[in-house]
Amino acid sequence: MHLLQRQADGSFQLVYRTPNNIPPYAILSHTWEAEEVTFRDMVEGIGTTKAGYRKISFCGKQAASEGLQFFWVDTCCIDKDSSAELTEAINSMFRWYRNAAKCYVYLEDVSADSSAEKFKKSRWFTRGWTLQEMLASKCVEFFSTEGQLIGSKSSRVQEIAEITRIPTEALQGRPLSYFSVEQRMLWTKNRETTLEEDMAYSLLGIFDIHMPLIYGEGKERAFKRLRTEIKYDQENTAVMPLENAQGWLDTTIDKDVLEYSRQRLSDNNGWSKHEEDVALRSDFFKFVLRTPTALHETNKHFKLLMRNSNDKRRPDLIAVKKTGFGERSIEVHVVSGASHYSNFSLQIATPLKYQSLAAQYDFALSDWNGDGTSDLFMIKKNNTGTNSTEVHILSGASDFQDTMLQLGTVLDETDETFAFGMGRWNAGDTPDLFAIKKSKTGTNTT
Image (tube, rainbow, N blue to C red; front, side, top):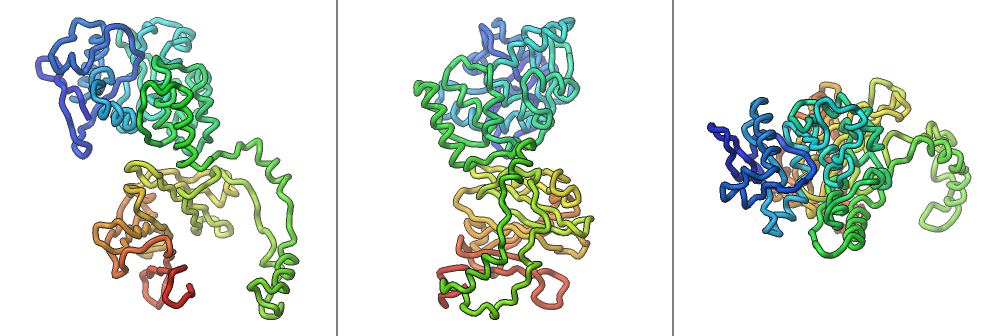
């Protein structure tokens, strides 16, 4: 990642930092105008007379005032003559904005004494690239053309929601995976980019996908490839709008599960011929609760678990999300049983990374240290550094932020033919790991 570093004399030097050595930095969000300073200008030490240098100078001074020596500006921190670097930058941009300590939005067309209406009509709200910059950044501050602070994303969140038609939850940091593909596509309405393909490329981070850039392919083909990647990664994951919840319940037909089971038992389709072989009890076949939840429809990227909660009658629903592209944090979403599964009690990224498409994972919950809290076990089946099936444990008491244990096991690397669970095999205080081989066994049984 190329960054600008402020020097003692007030000038700026272009530096490069590897991904594991990136210092705290500020980042600029703006609209491109005439005479922007380029990467080549910075390398050759020219460009200070260009109109766009004013924004670079502003960003550097503002960052320095907040103790940040490094900052990033898209016009001059990407070598656009290198197609490889441009592709990497565009596929990384959402992450770069998300990881920035501060995001300064420089509004070229809004002065310090402008009305709210002028802010509302700023060109910044109509550009394609600024959508992900606004959503990804945690701390966003707006500045006038004079460089004066005129508010922040948090202080103007209701106003921004009205301008953009984006829910306040998305503006306040709720994971974008919560919102359906259709919702996120609607956020692009009335936005445009200079290059037609960029309208699709500017959405890569919003859908958490990577794909190569092919300038010249046209907008239609770029969006076709984007939709293909979204379908592959998300498998049409969508949020069930709350207004549709009652309709979902109304159209769900209760089935006589007990009668169905009795009929199946009397068939000779691999089931027992004798009904008395199974003690059928009607209370096993009644729904105790059937309700929509706060969690959107899930797919192969989710592992759903249950844990005991403060409400002894209703356990919490735990959705562990791993993403399919890049080195992403594994997320934990806790749907509260006490709220009848209508509210999240926790949504958080963990220190664990989903690092490889080739690697396979399983997840389980158990109390590892006896503190009464369910801890999260990530079982990494293969592509491990120890050449064995690995166990990584996150503390439930720390909201899954502290690593309690990570180590290889006596079990060789495993694959999709294995499922894992936690339990107590004997009277010990520590839960044991159960590996269940489902298929391709020597006994032709599970």
